[in-house]
Image (tube, rainbow, N blue to C red):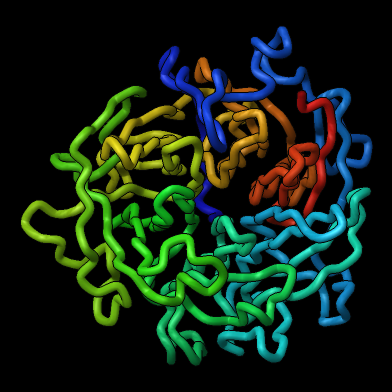
Length: 455
């Protein structure tokens, strides 16, 4: 997730590009629950400086720190790991909420995920997930390791049956960097009962630099993004399970992995006009899903090639479409064009791909709207985006008119007063009842619960 800082930003979303709206299910008339239309002004108003120097929020909102790196895990299994990243939220028993949190920790990490018998894939790897259980008042009552021994767990996605799919953004082979097993896989994690899922890679879903996944609730197809910094850039995939929507463990039954080809478009960064659509999207079988000799993005997909994009990151399902993010593109690094973030929509029934939002060069890094990363939908149909760029870092909202506004700002300065630096946000997600937004600060690893007048 972390990348070289950028310097400028501007939102280039065309008016009405998102007017159709996005929703978890059914139809809604607005993209963001909290737009100017709903509140009489853009967003929820200006951010109020936090006297504790952690998180600035609009008036009427408040936060609670649920967990911080270095603190003891309540389970006694060690300390809370660092590099808090993607996260899922699930309804639990007796009105409780379960959070499953990724840790994008590398093999040499000081605060890696503690190994636990029966939950550790590769003892040499320090990534994984922890789970937090919150009672009906939102207080943490349990915190434990959910999977260990994985590598650079970046983002992921939730299943319909209450498990978390955690993704390795790493392609180390056994025998390299001390690894005892191959990496680059997706793992299914049951946060309530981690031993039910164990530490088993879903190999049929491919071995590559995974970022995020989103599950189509109608067909059971799983969409996957690949975060690649350098050319050849990553691909957008779909996995067709042999047992779609089969519940916990069903993804282990295998399936077919395909990559997206947009005819005539080898690089999505070349498209810069919001509303541009392609109605002939093709899906091409991946030659070698385990990338035994060659990374998938470098494999031979035939004379017409395949479609790439730099920094494919956030991925989510809304309505009857899957949305995914390209965090940025830089022509100096091999991309066909330059932008500071794109949001794409793919409609499976129409095989149509549409560019909905473009973030582009601007002037002021203090303003929100650069390098979108993790992304989620609010219960009212809203869009929340975590920034991962240069300068100040925000959780931002996007209105249906293509405007951005601040919802939260990270105040934890990693630099100096004269040269401040702020860690990115990650893992934004809402509670099952829609009353609480959970979000991580990547460094120092901090998990917040945010409540306020969402409606």
